Image 1 (cartoon, rainbow, N blue to C red):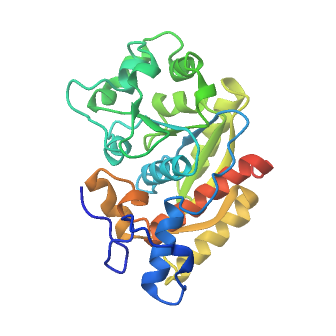
Image 2: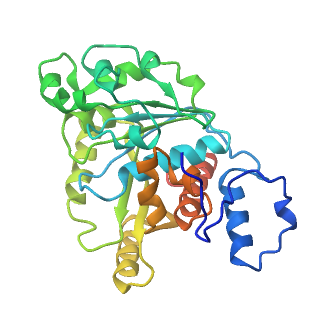
Image 3: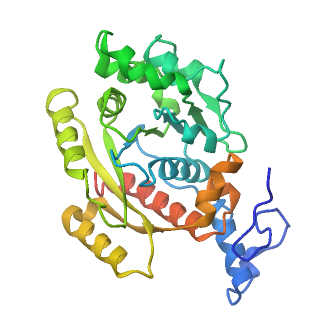
Length: 312
């Protein structure tokens, strides 16, 4: 495992025994140290837990908008602050599984065996190394053929919902489903199984391209398969404050979706891109980085929205 470095180039995540409350916030190193400790939950009370398990699909048919990155880092943030979280990797690419340090060999059991072979979800969930209260049901390459195999199965749209029904969700506060960048049967299964949809939107040109079709699909699923479904949260990702375009896209999304949009903007960050290659989230890879702090703040908003009902 690599050492965790802040943007200042020093390891601020290692336990030193120092009292960070006594460090004045007047240097970049001190600010990075305090940010890292905040991200890791030091000196902060646990965030509120929802009254019942929130099942959230992270979806956008457009690729490269930060779905997996958002899923993983929000899950880790919530778990670090006292919530019990299960990540279900429904993307055949399996990037969420990789980022959470899951084994994905040829003989690994995965969400495929739940959807196609009716294996119990409980038997497939693996604890995430180093993160208490976080589990992952991984995806393997087998999932690539699941779209075709599901076509011939009974109740093909609700296979995942049935698996959740057999799982004692009283033991969990959040289930986050990382959807593939398409609107096929896997994504439909996710939407039938959840109550909420979280949509990451990148602050770039063509940001809203394809979003209309996603919204129509959400409406179709709500009308025919899952009346409880609702878009609860929109996260603005890949924000570059140096460009006027990013601000314009952010303003346009807020104008369209209002309070559904989180106040926190997730910036472009090299550390966020690097972390998965080390089998980590940015929350553990570099907790003092701007990306980690932004995802921690976004997760805090999501946790407290559950308490106030905002955006739900």
